[in-house]
Length: 484
Length: 99
Image (cartoon, rainbow over all chains, first blue to last red):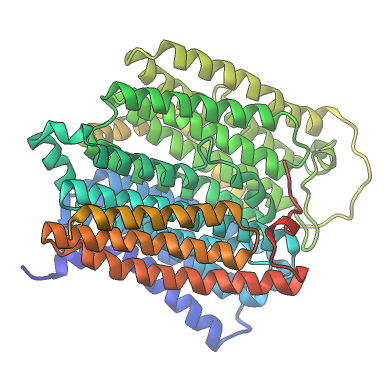
């Protein structure tokens, strides 16, 4: 066996972004006064190149590369497209947030690209080693990005909390991997599945179960499932707004991708005990997220708790463990990327260099002062609340109908009650923006066009997924079938 | 020596690391506890690899060490940056954001 050109072709999306990341770093070093628009253009071109390769991989036959370390199939290609969209929207939104510190733009963009590479590796991992490396590439880049404004105490605190809890969670994940490796005799994900079909008793072995539990704890931290969600609000509040958006969407989707790969290989969702564990986690995550979000007055914290609640809804689709459920999870993650990047994006759009619009009181009468921002924010809020005809409604519909088909009636009832609770705070913001009188006029300020374009793309994605879900759902069902 | 001794030792080390992260208040000590957790895992990997006569576990250890080194670089830089702004490394005093 040799490493051939084919291996590099299969890894092409990751390679393109890695090389682009290094190129951007070097450019920043050689031309420190380079226009940030030029850097943005280079990053977007690289992302477009990676997107082309990912789309090619979608229609190719599934294959493995680098001695079975990387798995390139519809699942990985689909998630890669999602990560590229999230990264592209994030870099476009970033032009505003870092006005004051524009000299370090090249590092900032390079770290976003490296984080995207980490996410892609997680989605395409065929071995727990690749999964771990992808996760760490992602996490280390995000630790730095979260504290990028390093004179600001809040940003540093966010970064530090994220770092400590992230490293702590990696410890658990790694211990889980070690125990799983010991009980199976290999850390390859297909090897785990193969051993389980040979020897069904393995699934009940204490070593195997402990390993899996520890891995779930590790992933639970990364995707902010209750009771491991405590870091999320602080980190999302302190980090630069576009980075919060990237963490809430891309990083969460990557965590779900890796979790699904492991859970499907270990085939645990058919076991009654695991179903009950995830049932409780899903309900707790939704309830904690939604109830605490009710009394937030900082919009970034509100969106953080909302993002915890959404992780709970997404988990419902994974618990269903059927084709509709998994297709729903993918539909949900894509819709969530558009609507949540959009919601954080409006916050970034309104932010001036040193001063952010983060208090909900500051949004009073926004519709009269900044109609574009208010209308797009309203679209994202309706979508997050799950009001038709937006993407959020259909995402919830698919996930819940998968769970009903699998017979989880109570889980769905509790989820629907939860999404009704969430209407209160999402629509509350719309009421504040449209029905209250503006107060305390702030100096007018024109954001850069890239930020507005990113918002338009996110709003278009949200409405497109909501109005024409059929074409997307066909693709996601094909993907879900390839998983099962 | 049987495998179980090594596994017990690494479980105890991992437990000490977890307790250190949860109980200590100094960021540097918490950070060292995390490193202890990772090294406990390394011991588990090596013990299993020797027991299974399989190289995967040994190779895993190298990657864990590389990742731990990268995390140290970022973590210590963060601690220095925090110390410059707040003049403390005690996590009780790093609490601008709550609920």
